[in-house]
Image 1 (spheres, helix red, strand yellow):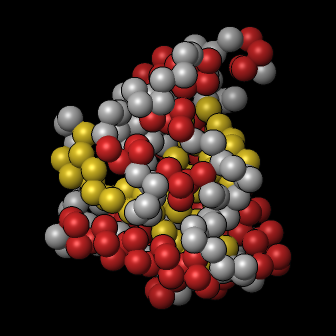
Image 2 (tube, rainbow, N blue to C red):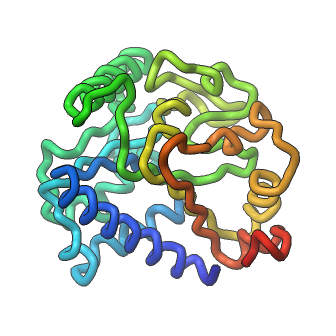
Length: 244
């Protein structure tokens, strides 16, 4: 624990380390990015020369865990935020950026993303039914959602499609990967900062298990690791054992 800046730096360091390990071990590093304030700070760290030079960018392929149904230049676009924060500042080939097309018809965009994720799974060695990301970055909403998997929505129980259209009470339409994609990853990292998240962090990690109401509780990598990066404010509601 520490400051929000510490979380951003640690997240960027984990990204660089995971990229190095995957590039050496498998020849490619596939990451699914998140939107939000804390990830933006992390992405800005990745653009810093001292860290950017440690990432084998030509081996990096970027995807997104979710996206708003807006054009890429809209200020609400998760892709647009990542592009401005770091993608345009590093030596990442354009062909290695696999964004969700938020400007398209939502169902067509979700189907296209689903097809691309299936193609990713076919290209991997060994190939499988699910794409296996080396790193999935996630945030946590005040209602317990993660990616755009909102409480009490059908998307929580989707096991066939890899990407769907979803909508929360106040969010508008979103594109989101489904839990089978998240839980197939080698490494999943939550980035959460701020006192306003403390109550929900405690509910997810220490509260009663009610995953339909608190979707983030469904994140449980089957063969990978799960890491929570919290600043002191976000961790303030946790008990002594969890806080340590």
